[in-house]
Image (cartoon, rainbow, N blue to C red; front, side, top):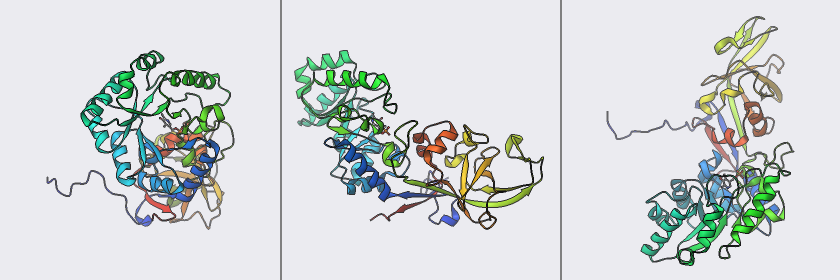
Length: 385
Ligand SMILES: *Cc1c(COP(=O)(O)O)cnc(C)c1O
């Protein structure tokens, strides 16, 4: 075995004909969604959350499109995501939401990343690093106001406030917290978290503040503070539960019809024979499966399902189990001119929304997007400049 020319992953083929699915990403819609959110947030600034490869869309094209639209501040989860973004956008402000692990401060310094410091230990380490670097380097302080995830407790914010020396050893550029129930506008947690946040940030030196993710941006003036940091809404996911989606779809996914076959009543489809034809049925086998992020929970009958694909403007239900590389749809009622080998079905896009897919899979659009696989041919429109 040699180590040269060793690729960890087979790169996806450049030609759609050689790939199972085609993933088409509308960068103009992404930019429009950012501008829409920026308008909602004004006079607060609008950042963009681009963690997890821009929610599966591709960090580089997404970040460039957002920068061109006017976005200047970005949030990632991991330090290496921050370094990747720094290489793409040398002038962007980049916050890293996971904060600091022991020994990581120098990496942040090298790549001009701002940690979202989530504990007194992390703050002490950042302060120590600033001393070594002889610079008051920028960072966010992340306070927890009720989601009980990352962030300083209220008691720790008070301890921090009492330590002026610690607070002056770095440049506090953002005080942030995160909402647990922003997607439910009427939830009492929202007002409670806002009140706690406003109380805690008042203890700290004056700095821009940020509480709102995508849904939080729609909660109104008291929630937008100085900066909002939407993710899912930019990528076309519905920021609300149970209300119409105001965002433009960004991601479309097409899968080829590999084979069309007819089965008699009584024949079954797929592993474990979970679906039985009740009539003479025409089936189409599509070339994408759970290895591509078409979640197995989309198998018939799915949640509130069945899941649907769109072929030639008509819907066809997914029948049987989702396999690793294929799904089967019932095309008996689809126009015969479209239900043919080599044609492509829309699996997600304008007719089958990411929100519908999420509902059928019993999950949220975030998981649909971040599960998108590596085997697709990815087409970005307009072309990357
Ligand atoms: C992921 C994340 C966001 C973005 O949330 P959306 O719901 O996708 O808008 C914002 N802030 C924090 C702390 C996050 O983890």
